[in-house]
Length: 146
Ligand SMILES: [Fe+2]
Ligand SMILES: [Fe+2]
Image 1 (tube, helix red, strand yellow):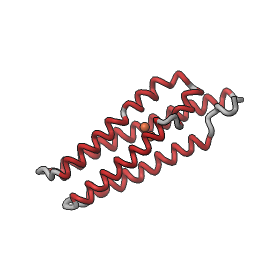
Image 2 (spheres, protein in one colour; image 1 turned 30 degrees about the vertical axis):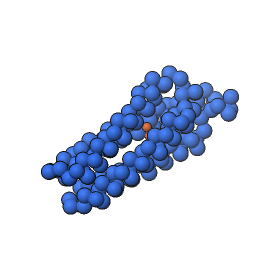
Image 3 (cartoon, helix red, strand yellow; image 1 turned 90 degrees about the vertical axis):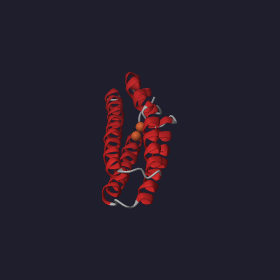
């Protein structure tokens, strides 16, 4: 039973990974907002971000942190599955943004700023929900061991 309980360190690992991703998003956001003529640089940063997110999503999907949480709190499964289904949408959006920058369409910079802002809002909302699923499961797990 102890083996199956959610480890505080796992919760902390996911929170730390989310915090790192927030920093990366901040950096990309600054680049997007400041460097109007640095098409190549922005495109590279968005491609790097996509690789980071692919890795992060595969951690979450490969029976990692959320999986443990759901063993302890199966009623959160639907919420967690809905979150996991959003992963390909984020990757698709980044893919489209980088292709679109590479094609250097007119007005790319203004549109990219608002598109990336929408992406960031959705993504941070996603991460926030994951934190809350994990936190709820962890709190219930702790409660059940009292
Ligand atoms: Fe996720
Ligand atoms: Fe996440």
